[in-house]
Length: 490
Image (cartoon, rainbow, N blue to C red; front, side):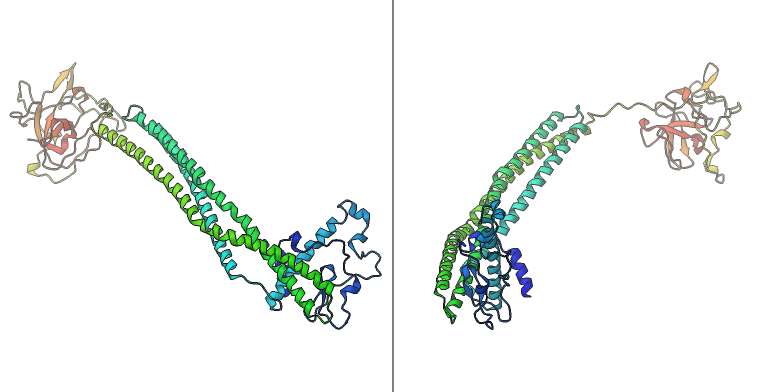
């Protein structure tokens, strides 16, 4: 467990050059100094400058010393080869490396003894509260900085999306539509508004918040350094107490440890006083800083929302006006009449029918009426009506108009009433079967409905077995074609 603790301390401690007093030119402890005069007493350990401390736990051995007979082992930093030190500034590099190693070792040892309860530990509850507040303030500042930076990234992404939307509107909105120029103007206003909003977020909110958060790492370094100095102070104080309790008092060592203790205490108190003045003031600044950042953020957002609302209202008015213009029929295109395929010329009823090709696009197919039992009130199919030689309006009902020997026009069947009808109506028929149109120019009707038969717009387009008319309940504008064998004349 202690070994793991040592490794953790080595990883977390930072090396500080002034953790210990300067080594000066005093030699390293010789092998005779590293051993206690009493071979059975293992309570003393070597310290810097040859001082001893009774902090070595029982059962452990002191750091091993090199054998005096080893000619390669120097007895002081000055005993090394001058050529080895020539490239590193003489004795400076060995001094610096030793100080770093001693600093780590003494702090780790002191922390272990404090955790085991074998050494006193200086505590400061007030400073601990300051440190807790500082940590909370730093975490909150970093969290706010992260979220505002993310908010700014999202605002810039929305700016790009808004720009793309208005580009699409400019392409979709046709030039002849009402408000086309206003759409372009509002697109420019929206782009300027988004740009201004992003700049305000960057300059007035994110940059000051970044400066506010950047001061925490420096203060964190001071807090950590104060902690290291406190450990050094406790270590020197513990050494001095052990020396004073030792049976063999060494006044030189005691005086030296006292000097080291005073130096550690002076450095610690200077840092402690500085942090006592700085941490409470920094913690009190959190409120005005947060208030200032939020005020600039939401002031910019309020301005953006107000101006954005005006742009949205203008766009809504443009769309509403476009809808009204469309309802008036302003943008309706001219509609043409679909051209029907050229029909086969009509022939006299008594003449044989001309066979047609089923797949020919110029002939409307003849639709057969549903097969049902014959009833007296249904009448006879149109093809079975016998034409009689009766004149209607100066012409025979069965004699259609002829052009160059070809029968053209609608034939009025015998028995059909031609008097008292509206203008343009040849005769009337009653639907004997239900018919649903299969083309846009056809007429749908139910059984029993009365249909006014009229002449084709172009008599040459008359098709065999088909009539043109409109239902009695509608107007002539809703006329269409329908099969004659689905009706009977009245």
